[in-house]
Amino acid sequence: MINRYEELDSLRGLAALSVVFGHMYLIYDETILSKLLFEYGPLRATIASNEAVTLFFVLSGFVLSLPFYDKRKFNYGGYLVKRISRIYVPYIFAIFIAFILRGIFYTENIKGLSNWFNINWSFSININTVIDHIILIKTFSSNLNNVVWSLVHEMRISLIFPLIMMIIVRLDYKKGIVFSIGVSIVSVIYFNLLNPLFLGTELYVSLHYCSMFIIGALIAKHREKIINLISNLTIRIKIILFLIGILLFLYAHPSFVLNIIITDFEPFYRTVIDSWFTSIGAGILIIFSVSSLNLARILKNKMIRHIGKISYSLYLSHLPILLSCIHFLNDMLPMWVILCIAIIATIIVSSIMYYFVENSAIKLGKYLTRSHSLVKDKQSKVGIKVKIM
Image 1 (cartoon, one colour):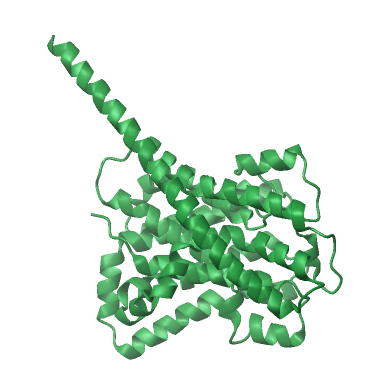
Image 2: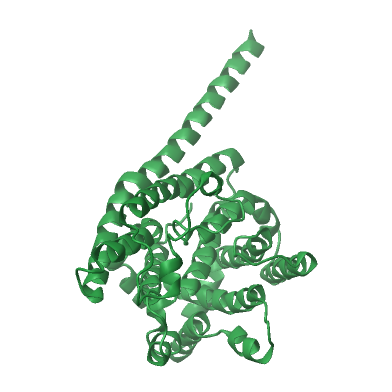
């Protein structure tokens, strides 16, 4: 029996919100005050978009691994159909909407806004762009919706995840951790041998992010032991451990120091180092989410649960809506009003998209796998009858 952890849905929803606010933060150039408040200060959690993506990967590893521990017969074809339906159908819908919105609202560069904002939607769309977005798992950078980079890794890793789990189910936690670190090291070796450009969607980057999936899978495998261990700790130790998790997740970025010491420090190395610290923090937050009654009570709040439900649609739709609102309303309203409108519009559109697109995609995956199973059963029964005759 596979447990449904609603707390983790809510955790994913809060992470998706931080991506939304993180992109809003980027529309203006940074100042010393904004850095002190949002990047190094108490408001870091509100804009932790890169950290949120690492959390998504660890959560995916946790959730996707659960059926493999249930000792049921695994069907790769059924798994693949469900996974593609779950990720790809809402994604294609969101990309199509982004394409339409760009055509309607894009107004060239807006003076006073950041380079990051003005780069978005600035490149022309051609047939190669369309093909890259349709295939999804190629190495490319999306100008329609830059959150696509994480979906490239999510889809690639999902395709090979059953193979990863064939290894994980046979390993204890120590060997599992070594395996995870080893995969990340191989990605660094791969990078050094090829010495390619770093766009963020290369195969060697996906290889590194496999480690984050493995961390999630290991937590899922040993969750009962971990929950029992946490429950036996004193309140003081629990609080300290939880705070360590938050600090690792939000503020542990050793590459910032290394980048000052080492000139031309490779961006990929920064990604590897920082994401490892972030994933450990994410793992601690996941553990507390499924083991702490107080935290679970917060995460099961009705509003937070709704954000958790629509988190994927929220993640996919927020940036095109934000860009559309700013391009359309920039000369009419103050920016804070535009951002409020963008947030409200994003929640509404994401909710509609969840109920009509995501749910339909999930049902489609179940229907296709069920239909395939019924056909196979009928074929096997016919084969039995023929043998008997």
